[in-house]
Image (cartoon, rainbow, N blue to C red; front, side, top):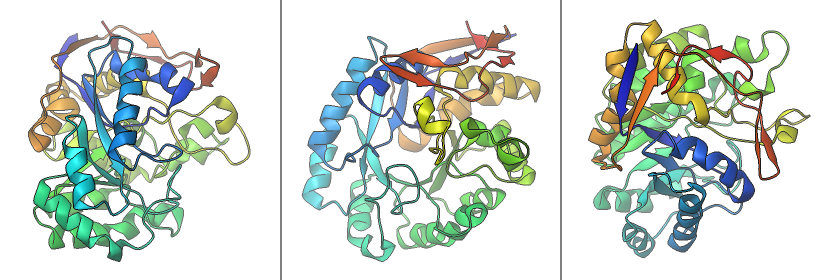
Length: 335
């Protein structure tokens, strides 16, 4: 069995910078036609000049692969002039809003959502998408649930603003997705497959720890069913987030799961297992292209039901990253 995907897209990707980016960028660029690149570097990517320079470094790290980085700016109440300057760059995609301190390198994020209205009105007027890390600072299992009223409020106040609920993890988020025309969502590979029990039910598995944290079986099952059924507002966003091994296997483990090199193969295996391969194209490209009117580079990727073993680690440029399911064999691979 095999499937050929047209212009697969990763709608939420962390490439980091420097030597780490040199190692991980080709892992995505070889199989994806493009990806929405997160801006939470240190310091964050907040202006057009930094965005342009970062895009150039990514394209250089892609090592000749036909790959389009869709660039985002770290939300900081940008002015009209700043947004117009960003729009002049054809690689600019949207703004990413982080509640301050909600996840990795988000300390400079938004502290008072009530002060964002001016920029959000400008984004609505100019057709700039808003991507949100939707978590509160409450109890870890309830943080997404607590944030849903914020999504509801924004969707109502700014009905023409295209809002993406990033890496959703709950059945409740899916219900909200269907309630507002201008809400869309991405979901990760890990949140389609694992629950909190996989992370912490036995011995702690740090390479499965991410934010938002994995939730209950009912949430996982709802997300998986939505993806398998071809939900028209749900897009694949890996949230693949590499960290050096010493930042994961330590006290104070960093949040992030690395899946980029094998994400498409594992998705193909998952959809095939559930007799839903016909809906994989929409999930990994069709929905995103329609929602955002994207025209990524022409690229086709063929996946076959030939087993592959996920490496124990990815190494290079002085970096070492342990992926999700390191050492495990999966049933599909890239042809």
